Length: 240
Image 1 (cartoon, rainbow, N blue to C red):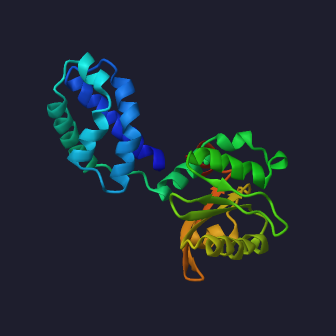
Image 2: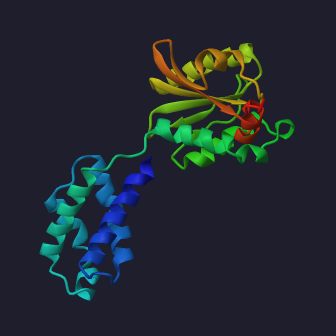
């Protein structure tokens, strides 16, 4: 996600400061330079020269900690390069999978079937994503769903209301993908049934399909899944 790299940069800077006994103004130093550093890292334009220009603006930090600016700058630059070589941001697909797991592990109890709308569940997903997202207003054509420009994806959300309603989501999602010229979409279906519907029975709860040459990730979230303890009791062998 877009904020993860920034948090990682701040953590690396702070760790390096404490390792070099430079704790005075450390928080202010790390948070003030990290936005520019992160932007240059993402654009692959960070080098030692412009890194030195960024941190020299914080002369208060170097004076307070009695640091040699050139030596500290070079060492911190090398540490950033080394640790970011191992940096792997969480994939958007994994974030959606985690949302599914958390909803099924108890969060659904806050969304009773008879009192929960598609809008409510969609907004819950937007809040969870904690990203730059756009959720357009409901229009005459139906629900426009979640656009995530940083990931170049659109998410369509629906309640499970049978095969016809489920199938109607694909052309809607494709229309939004056309609008933004994206090639990847997520179709999130909230299903309150305990027994698997026909789609889940055939494909499972998470699968990919091609629709109009675009890759669509289909994710069913079981809002009323049977608890593992109940399943165990039903399948527990009886002593004969």
